[in-house]
Image: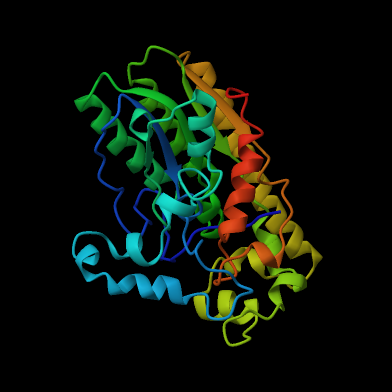
Length: 315
């Protein structure tokens, strides 16, 4: 199973607030045919250019800080943390991402014929995804000739880690689907919404106690003590607590499946597929970034293949 929630943590008291580390990116639609991805740090490719098993592999992210001209024009996260253009399972050009798969399926030789728009922001919860959808829809309204070839959604990991209720997440996603359904299109809008991975398995000894390439520190030290990534689901004292963590992830996955089914019933112009493929994937240390939390390049590739093989449209 691949795990991987989102980066950066905040005090969460209610879903009706932004938890992402920044606002959704600006949208400039350049092509009449677009693919768009919504989500959190998994889709943003956070730390994908690092690997837990390589010595000092966090250096590439630090090295990105050297390009000060970019830093003055972009959010820090986009230069030092996220890897949307190269290594995201959804939009990366450096792996067999869904963008590359879709170009091949459509036999698109000129990249200008299909634009990929990655709206994901690290730290996002359901409310932040709603903000992403609103911003994208506003951009499309300025270019009403835009046709949406494909949409991906991967959200809910931060909601679950931070105790946001499935009911709140359901409400935010319902509004997001309502907005997407209001965008005029010639054909139904194809939307793939993914399950969460088995987040709790990051706390199992095979990963928790594994030494990393970062000064031989264990994943427990890096992820749980230094970064404090989702300790609420990756630590337990007994079997009952462990089962409780499993139940929380499975409940959120049930919520994601339900909103996908409900939205299809409400909106005849949406074609939504819920995929449980990510939840069924195995996880091992070799697939983790240097933070022992997010997927590295190999992990991003596995996510892409698992979800692409589970979508029903482009076969």
